[in-house]
Length: 340
Ligand SMILES: Nc1ncnc2c1ncn2[C@@H]1O[C@H](COP(=O)(O)OP(=O)(O)O)[C@@H](O)[C@H]1O
Ligand SMILES: [Mg+2]
Picture 1 (cartoon, helix red, strand yellow):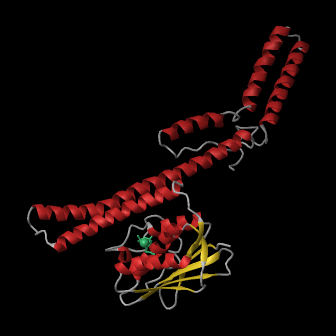
Picture 2 (picture 1 turned 180 degrees about the vertical axis):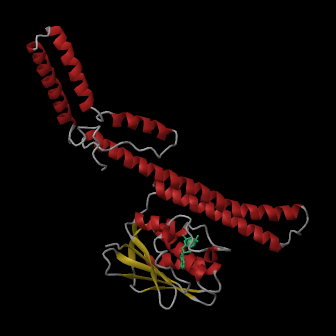
Picture 3 (picture 1 turned 45 degrees about the vertical axis):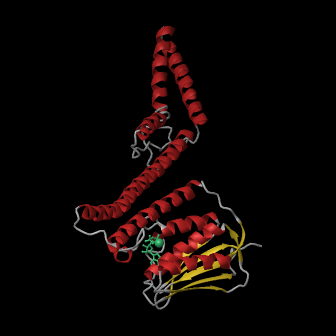
């Protein structure tokens, strides 16, 4: 709260009712006092009455200052917001109900400004991510049309890779917006963890022949309570990263077990890549965040995989976090509720 404003004498009064009481009491008191003083001084009652009314009006104006101005400020600010200006704030020094409304209004304005900033960032990021493969495709197509390059399988494969990248990006964006809007509710049920992990690993092995990917389920017959399709998506996203950052000839392992954790089921994806530093620990879950350009270059994704994984894990009431591995590498730990 800012310092007391001498031009708002009743700012510290904590309730509108008390404020009105003070104003009415002061007005009546001053009117009576001035009126009788006037009569005693020998003024005509009508003249004394008019003087008393003018002075009382002045006192009311003085005392009531700042009681309604935040409301006017709020309606101005709301109109400005409707036009897209989220930077306006209103005076919130009063301690009564109008003051707390003004504070709530300012908080809401702050949150709207932040949401608006995020929205702009997302639009900028999405456009950038879409433009990169489109530019590459356009260049390749122009070369084909101008007969600079023959339509050989290699050129067509590069073009196909760009189309696939576009497709992947659009699917991820759709997934994220569906998850956020709650459009696809979780189909929650007890399910066997092992087949889900094995399915995700088999898919990944097709894309990463140079890396050895294996599954170890330490608790036989491990079951979790969740949506197996969504959990598959989480593991697939984690595996995609693990395989991408592990050098050729390296090993990636998926481990799962019933744990002492209150939630009950722990799934880990371990890789031999560069690992995730402490400063990146939380940022990697932000949309479009990529730890560094070197790592994200080439076939890197758009930085949406972990954001999606975190949404899904949150929907399950679970947790996801990266840990360091010695001597190098990353261990992504996901905890999910067990089925009892
Ligand atoms: N296993 C990992 N090892 C090292 N860095 C990782 C790993 N997984 C994720 N990261 C970092 O986190 C960033 C965000 O990951 P993600 O959301 O999956 O996006 P993307 O894979 O599309 O780049 C990656 O760009 C990478 O920098
Ligand atoms: Mg990824």
